[in-house]
Amino acid sequence: MLMEIPRFCCIFTLIFMSFCVVQLNCRNATAVKADIGAILDLHTTLGKICRSCISMAIEDFYSNRDHTAMIVPHFRDSGTDAFAAASAAIELLKNTQVMAILGPQRSVQADFVIDIGDKVRVPVISPPMSPILSSKESHTSFG
Image 1 (spheres, rainbow, N blue to C red):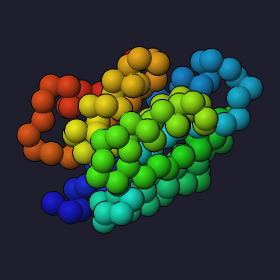
Image 2 (cartoon, one colour):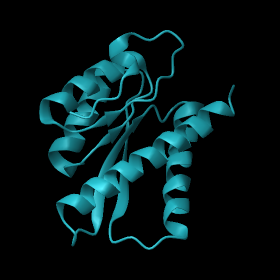
Image 3 (cartoon, one colour):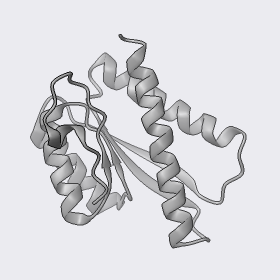
Image 4 (cartoon, rainbow, N blue to C red):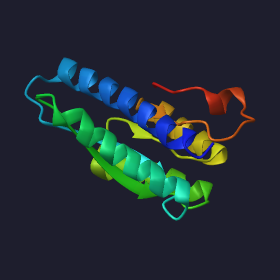
């Protein structure tokens, strides 16, 4: 089961990066940087693994390709608090102006972040980490 989670994070990261590069190239052909947010519980083993997997997936994605746009991840720690996750999302949107958000890990936190993303029309990809998910928690929001 533990090996499935890193693979899961890598798959979502690659899908997420492909979406961001396509969106960026459609908007502005001269853009060189695509800021994305990643909200994880960086005090847990799973959060640390996901952060490493995201970084490695981005590095691997660009290692053998030539792209005009470079995806730059901005990691934020949500801890176990839904308010901290929502605050991280708002900070990423307001100060960093990310074009998409990956995470958070917990279903309760994802509810808040998805609502924030919907309001400002920024896609949020929240990989389901719980076997029991509501319909809101299991969908991907693309604003």
